[in-house]
Image (cartoon, rainbow, N blue to C red; front, side, top):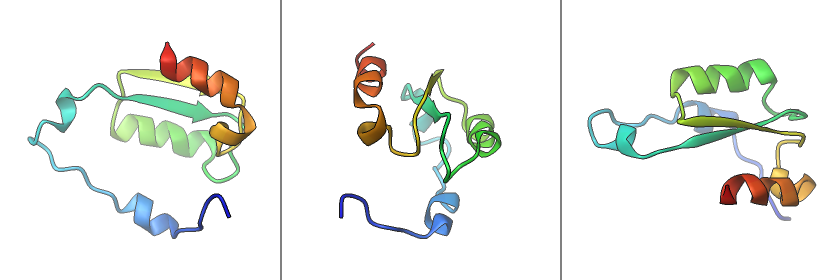
Amino acid sequence: MLLRPCPKALIHGAMFPEGKGSDKVPRVYIKTLRDKVYSREQQDLFIKRWPPSDVYEIDSDHCPMFSNPSHLFGLITS
């Protein structure tokens, strides 16, 4: 098994302490357009709640490292 199931509550309950320098770390969000785990609206909410420096879109399911690795690699290395 390449990926193990985990409860969504684990991810939704993640909290990042403010004032600890976390906002100084540049981050990007890669929006997966064919994701069946998180809808586009849910991904937009993630982006709104913790805005990244950049947002990229990829024609992929929830696991772009398997379904579209070449495009993902291009985004990561750009």
